[in-house]
Length: 226
Image (cartoon, rainbow, N blue to C red; front, side, top):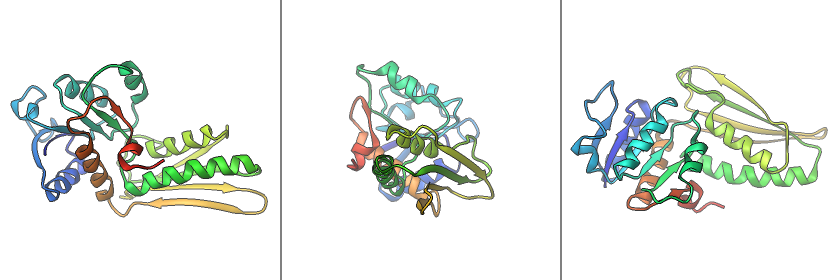
């Protein structure tokens, strides 16, 4: 599979390494800091899929540019209004696009457990949820997109007040903890990434699944999680 990378920071470089380990070829890199490639280049047009990890202020334009050229997109940039773009394209035919706040397989298992646990504890009553997320000091958005997704799941279960605490320190790849506290006890869900490799692997797996497909896709369908 031929892959175009949009954004070539630490995540983009890790994605390139994982993609090559899985037998894929990186044919184009769109990043003004390290490449002269453009969306109009012949190299980009040959890509089977693009993987986009750039900046919140550039993500929407990047996704639009790739789709306009017929290239499916896996987007992992957080901190931008992805739902507005999804609503705009609702019902329209376009190359496949999948967006997730986190491509880690472990985190997506966490999402599945979090949604079920939130429904259970809301029905029982007496528990108050809170989320803590810890990331490296270079992360541009706070709270993290993953923490926002976790909060949205809890709100969908019926809770109305979900506090998120964001911590930025060192080079932490990512820690997410959901704590439910009652008068009697505390129940905690926690995911800690060891490195960026898990995120990169998940993004490449998603790219493998959407190449050649059309429409907006959900990551839970790609992984088969309910």
